Amino acid sequence: MSSVPLGPYVADLRLRLFDDLRAGREPSQGSFDPTALKEAKVKGAPQMGSTRYEPNAIHLEFIFPDPGSVASVFAVTLTPPERIVFLPVPAWVVENIWQGDVAGSFHFESDAMRLANEFLSLLEPAANRPLFEPAAAKRRE
Image 1 (tube, one colour):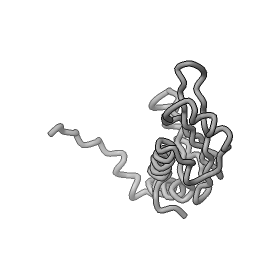
Image 2: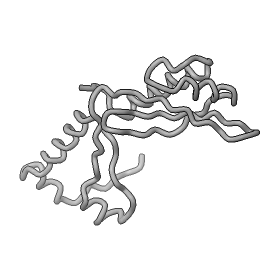
Image 3: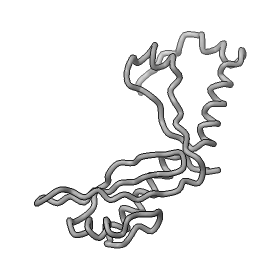
């Protein structure tokens, strides 16, 4: 079980791996294609790319731009300390408030369970009743 939420956990890993790549080193963690790294390094300094999640993997991408040709995307795959789950926004939030593309967010399973339990606790009569009261006015200070 992880004691750090997924976002800060991945941000720390990204920065460490980015520092490795900027210093010309191989990534200090994770698995990657050494041939792809060698080819990417020729193109110049790395830039941060996207992050993609799977239940049992974190895929970090780093972009090596080349003004004279096509940029290279170099991927590092890491194994998370626990299963990652996608925690969706409850259906009524999407339907009644935003009417938009809000779909949810990624969390470690333990954090998702904590968030879900906190939400469920708000359904208890004593905790739910105050939610019907008018919201206090917010002041700017």
